[in-house]
Length: 80
Image (cartoon, rainbow, N blue to C red; front, side):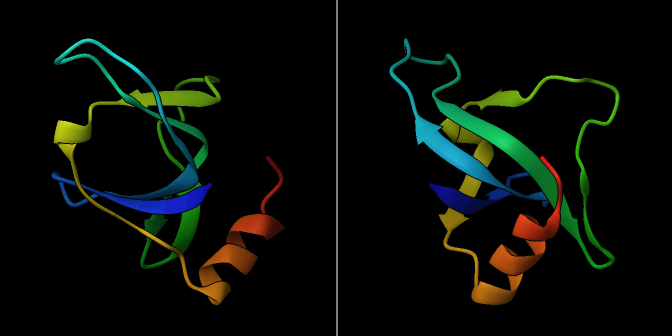
């Protein structure tokens, strides 16, 4: 499901989010086709890797929200 994630660092990501089973303290949030949302638009986050799946610990996420229609359209216009 496409979601926007606000990390504790203030970084805002958009991607397809799925909760996964994990041991306490291990990453339990899988994000695929992820991009950073900035004031200048969306850009590839962690551009030093070709990994298509990002694993995060829910403890590092401040909140997860639904993207608005404009944000969804911009995301869908990017080639994944």
